[in-house]
Image 1 (tube, helix red, strand yellow):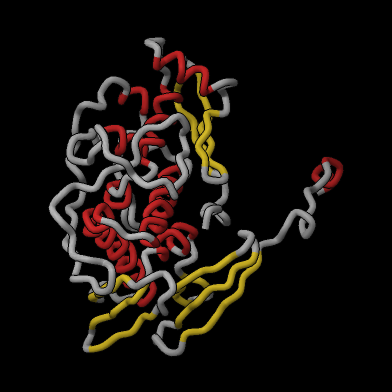
Image 2 (image 1 turned 120 degrees about the vertical axis):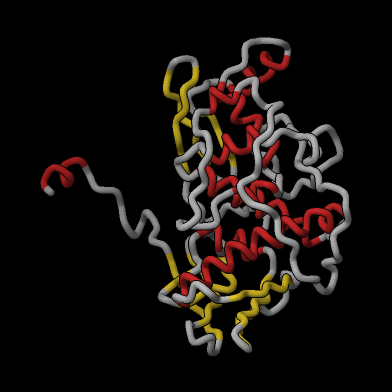
Length: 311
């Protein structure tokens, strides 16, 4: 799905840049510095040794981490798991060579089946810096100096502290990037699999425990192929989920995990307005569809100024 951002609303925050409050806005899969008339020209000048500014640094960093699986490990796993991060991006300029201690360890997943082989020992590689702030999530990571074992995590933590919903959009970007990689698995996918599996299982476990109201639920996640049949069942006190990795981007990132009290196992849309959800009730009984449709501008035309004044 090339338009992976369908259904994700815009997100925006402000940072201090050149002594002014500048807006960073994410929309339709791209992050933009909307208070800069020609960001590409500014970045070209900076590459030639000119002065760099925080807005351009954020765009560059976003491009470097838009396919970085560490985002899924370090980012919040839900409302009960807020991340503590530096929100002052200016303080990060010139400090990217430093390192921070990740707030969570990566748990080793249970052995997977099918084409999800056990991971090797090499580090997975992140998407390298490019000429845009929003590389396509379908573009595969490449070899280079941005290997996860050497690249600083300080700018990543700063990105996660930007606020305004941008952390969630970065998570969605990374989830989309790796969902595409599952379509054509390779050695790098195997290397990144522990982080991908752990990040999804952590979010899934937190969601299921909250949904069932049982903090002691033990959950086992089996990753299945995208065309497989998702399921959620309990046996001997253990909840077993069979879901594709796409669940993270298609369901969790869009806030569709719980709908009408039912747990969403899959979500499909053609336009980002009408959704067909595959859901299951808290009794873990039969799976059934739920259809939701967002109103369009034609359904809810904007109020005129005269109407606003009367109301």
